[in-house]
Length: 142
Picture 1 (cartoon, rainbow, N blue to C red):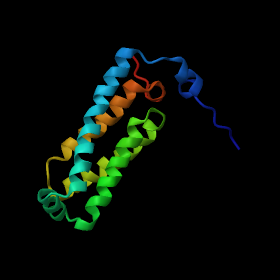
Picture 2 (picture 1 turned 180 degrees about the horizontal axis):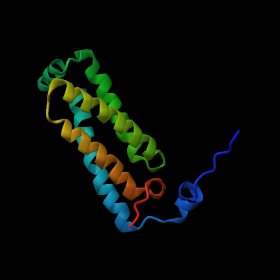
Picture 3 (picture 1 turned 135 degrees about the vertical axis):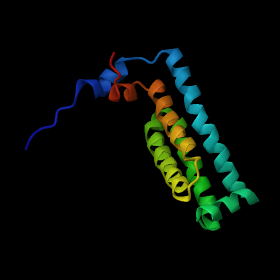
């Protein structure tokens, strides 16, 4: 058996040793707020089920019975993402949710898939600025 050694760039002690400046933290919070606010708005719309949302679900080929379930799922993804200790898990969950939305939009020929892809980029971009552990995993070199 071969042992797998962990790179020093991604060990918890190295990531914790590199503090996040206030400027980077606030940049990350602002970038992160964009997908969170849009997804919260989307979740609220799903939970309130106005006629345009129901019609949209029919257009996308989803049964009306799934609207509330997807709204709750979207809301939970956002909550997990905004809690600092679970933000990486939240980013993974939001990426999965947005991936499904992207696939749905592409399948029906809706060009708004670009927005869901951008939201996914903002999810990880915001987390990159907020969390030194993510920066240690994705180091940009000059």
